[in-house]
Structures are given as structure tokens and as C-alpha cells.
Image 1 (cartoon, helix red, strand yellow):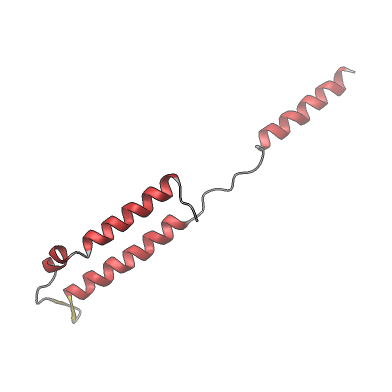
Image 2 (spheres, one colour):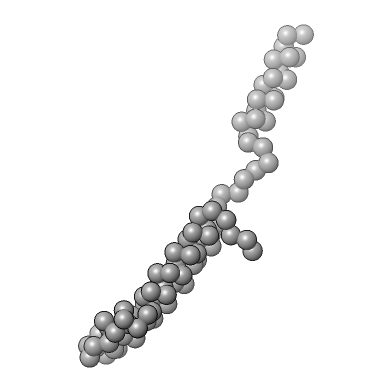
Length: 89
């Protein structure tokens, strides 16, 4: 699938943010002997980044509004033009 426009930018931004978040200098900030609900902080950070990546991928993968072939206003305009022609006859 070819990504264009904002979806492409979104994908690149998400990749860079997750990549930088999982680099050793950033991970070493969370490599401290601290337990949160008996879970080491580094595990919470790594799985948190992973969950964030999945959630943001889902947000970025949503389809935009469907574009119709012709706008409804144009169809109404054609109908109104036909009515005005009939009325003048």
C-alpha cells in the first residue's frame, strides 16, 4: 500500500518516536531498582512504548471520510436547473 500525505508523515513520526524511545540511553533512564505494582519500571516502560505504538498505529490507520464521486449539492443543482427549465416552458 502506498501511503501519501499525512499518513506517510504519521508513520515516519511514529517510527522515529518509538525508535528513539527504545534506544539504550533512554531505556537506561528507566533501569533503576524501582517496582511499580511489583513490576520493574523498565518493563513497564518498554511495554508502555509498545502499547503506545500499537494504539497510535490504529489511530493512523483509520480511513478518512469516504469521498463520493459527485457532491450532493451538485446533484441538487442539476435537479433545480431541470425544474426551472420545465417551469419556463
